[in-house]
Each structure stands twice: as C-alpha cells, then as structure tokens.
Amino acid sequence: MKLASKLIVNLTLSMTCLSAAAIAATGTTTATSAPTVPATTATIAPATAAPAPTTIATIKKPASKAPDIATSTVTAPKKEEAPSVKFGLGYDLGYSMQAKAQPDGSRSQSLSHEFVPSMSYGEYNAFAYMGYNQDLVATNENGWSDLILGAGKKAWTLSEYLKLGPSITLVQPLTNKSRNEIGLLYAFSAALKLTLNTKTLGMDAFKLSYQGQISRANLQYDTNAKTGAPNRLHGYRSRINIGYDITDALSFSTQFDFNSNYSVNGIVSNTFSHSQTLGYTLNDHASLSFTHSNEGPYLKTGTYENNLKFFNDEDSSYSIGLGLSI
Image 1: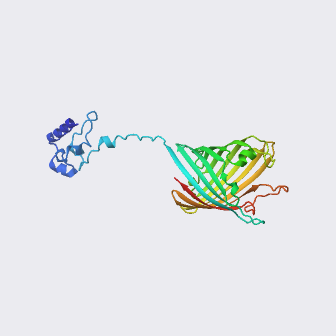
Image 2: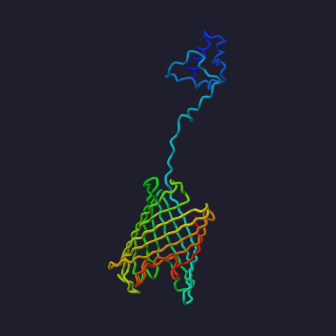
C-alpha cells in the first residue's frame, strides 16, 4: 500500500498538463496538500484492483479519514448464549372466609401457606406445589395438602394470533382424605393451553386463554371408604381465563372451570368452579390480591336443576392474599 501511494504521488508531481487555474476551478487539490497519507487511502485501490487514476482531479477535497478495516468491514458473528438453569421460589399467604354465615351461626375460616419452588432451563420449566392449611374454626383439620409436581414447555407459536403450550402434573397424596378415604396412590394429568396473542390485535392489556386437561387416578379402592360413593377414576377439565390490566400495577382476572368426572363404574358427574380476582403489584417481588370464588355440582342433588350460580350462600368465599417471589 505504501508503494502504491508513492507511485501516485510521483505520478501527480510529474504531470504538467493542468494549470493552477484549472485546479482552482475544479475545487480540488493536489495529492501533496492532503493532510496525511491515511487520509488519501480511502481512494487508493489495492494493487490488484483497476489502475490508479491518471489525474489529480479525481481526488476530492477534503479527503476523509480511511475507515479502520479491522473494525468496520469485518463483523464478528454473535455468540449464542447457552441456556442456563434458573431457580425461583414463591410463597403465598392467604386468609379465606365463608361469604355468608350459615343458619346455625357457623362460618368457616382458614389460613393457607403455599410454597412453590420452580426451575427453568431454556424453553422448559418445572415446579412443585406444597400447601399447608390451617382451619381457624376446627383445629383438627390442619395439615398439608396433596403434593403437586409439574412441568411445562414454552408455548409453540401457531400463528401471529395463537400460541399453544403443553404441561403435565403429578399428584402425590398427603392428606388423610386422599390416602385413607379415597385410597389415592397418585394422579397424573396432561394439559394444552391455547392463548390469544392480544398484542398483535393492539390490545396488550387484555388476556384470554383456554386450557383443556385430562387426568387419570390410580386408586386402591373403587368407593370412598367414608361415604361409600364411587371414586373418580378420570376426568376432563375445561378452563377459561380472562384478564385485563387496568394499570401497570392493578389488574383484574376471572377463571371458570367446568369438570366432567367419570367414576370407576362409569357414572359421570359435572362440577364447576369460578373466581374473580383483583390484584395489585407492589414491586417485582410482592403482590396483593382480593378474590371471590364459588364452586359446586353443576346439577342440584335430587332435583337435577341447574346449580350454576355466581354467588352461593354455602360455597361462596372471600379471600385476601399476599404473594412473595424471588
């Protein structure tokens, strides 16, 4: 490159066909007036390229600094980060109270502690749900709820509007009712959740999803050891979730479940449950919630009338919760 530069400078100095007046008219300068050699290398072609220009009129004024080839013309490919294992822990403290006092004056109240450790790796995640319930009215009902182990995968993108995410859960019985009355050994379920990508519709604050779940129980007994009723062998649950972000911190959500349960002798029973929750996010690690919920059989016992209600004197309850996560 230095040799080529010297040749051009020598060639320029030896040319006498252009007068000083012609140079001034064209608004150019000679190679000898350029600030430095690097400033003219932007117009100097490599030795293997076409021949250098034969007139100094092709050198623009002022000459720009040549780019650094090492940094501007060669871009190193980005290194993809390998997925890492991430751990999390959630804790929910909840107080629940029966919405209405019963005719005998009783009103159930309970305190719940829920622990949810989790782990994620790339597109996959796993969690465990452990709950401890304290009955504030009947103290002999205190104890751990059944252990739930779950795993899932990041949702597949079906289109710009829909996503589909799979998950599985395994239930291990811990309660006296599950182990001794029902005779549950374990229960397995698999679910698919279809989510509407509301961002593409310009409705970021709105949330809508549907989940279908099938479950199967492995039982010791065909009937409940306490009541004599046939045990549930398998079932299908339909769940609809609707949510709306009122502000960045305040949100409203509602959930509706419809369950079809099949007993060991083929009897089908349908149940429902629904809840409405107003949530407030305090910060990245804490939130508050206020919930109304109701559940029960879809048809009334004996009369088989529709029992689907928003509010029920016996089964509706109110709860407040504090959620913490790290």
